[in-house]
Image 1 (cartoon, rainbow, N blue to C red):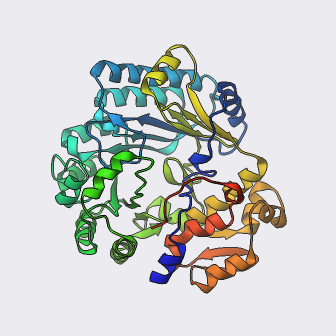
Image 2 (cartoon, one colour):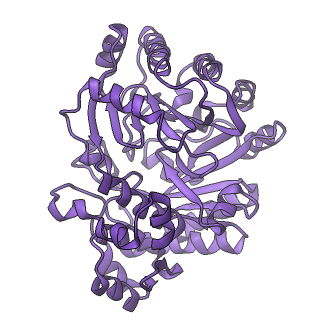
Length: 454
């Protein structure tokens, strides 16, 4: 494995979207946003996936790479809530009324940093606008450092049916080194409260943080397994202090280097698989009866900015709030990062579009290819050709398909391939981003900066 790390641990896109967000450009007008919204009503997927970005945090974790800001005065938080509600009203006027909600996701920042009554107001407004599919996913990310059982009960009352608990690590020394507050009450009490309300439970962890060792992270994963969450995520920490200067503060303590970081991940992966979890994508582990596991078996797993989902629940993403990214069939759009500019623009009746990207037909095809690989660990060229109503040759021509490169991956034990499909081997799963990058035409003329896969 060491020789693979030295060969392939080079910067490549994360491919949580295609094209990646750092390809978005500034000269994307509000008029283009409205054109994309109108066009989205006639495109697949037809379902609605709503994302609400709450950028506030009560204190800043040093590792954070999200668009987040320290908690503001109460008046500004109220104004931000009101602006989100206005943005929802503006955008939803242009969405066809017959469409249905499949997902709602609150992210941040720490969404639960603001009063939970505000969260309930926003969620209720969305649910009043459109009907839902059967069993939609209504999810929110939670920081357990500032919440007790009663707070989680309030979220259940507000209509949430999936809670992601941002534990990051059970080791308090690691949390302290990252300036992250430890859970306010024991996680097992939170789990019990949520289970009593039939809420689906996600645990989020990060590996590659200061003071982590293979042994210490094993203890964290063992504690997690004992609590039996429905889904568990092991995010790879990306150290990019040139982009997020606060990450320099982590360097006061030693960060795990490539080999140790790889060992931490591989050991966690082994423990979770042995405990009966099914691996989904690079970093998600789910129970065998989870719909993501079933979708993986059927090769129908999908992904959007909300994370992994099934084709049943996937929808075009309409995002609200500062820095929020809408993910439509033909375009991406991103709001301004400035909270003040966001509020002022919305109050004038406009959408504060800061960046965007209009996808060409070829890029929409390539998005299908890369999404299938990243989600399902395989590319079946005929399936994609049928989906986009083109020939296999036309689909391949949208990529930088190179048989010599594919054979090199195969010789290294990362993939197996034929003219019909490409499949990732389990040993090669950490390097799926490298395989995706080998097919990506945009990278041929790119000077963008990316993180390493490990």
